[in-house]
Image (cartoon, rainbow, N blue to C red; front, side):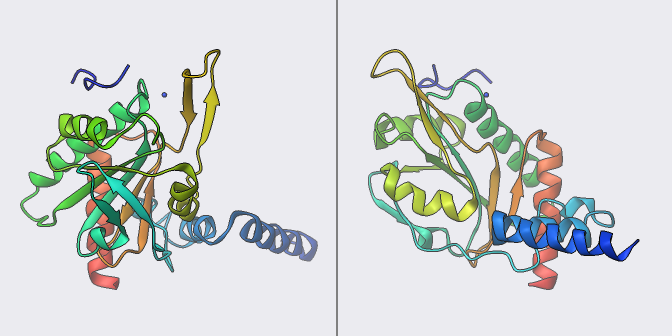
Length: 226
């Protein structure tokens, strides 16, 4: 697939030290990252297909407000009732963003071919570049990958209300000219459950089949365990 039109990458002391280290990690990294540490200990060796889950106690998505590519307001309630893959980026990103959206498209196609998997998966692309990524620009960009994809953005101070929840901070990096800049941003794909719990994070490297398998496993796990 060619780039989209608007795109331009056993002793007691030891046990005490381990407990202190884990407590310090929880305090420094916060609840979402702590969930990932717990998951690795509990599920990782026995259920590698669930290694991307934030479990137990996946965080609830707090209120946020963006402007969607169709120009209307988009909030957390627009994601309620459906499984959603959320990815942060910007349309001038030369490689990571178009590559990840193409990967998501292939993974959704793989899930669609699975007759035992009857869940529709939404995709929300959130731009961290509100200055350049107007609704019109976002509309062209996301429709290149799939007409059903959602694009949205917001000014930086508003966008941080969403990115901080997911430990997905971003930073603007300036070039030699005022209009020359790019962004360092998270390359993770987040899975939001229909009840707005953030249940998974998929981190590179990924391929479409493994991403589809992980999504399928998490959705099935959640359908049993709630």
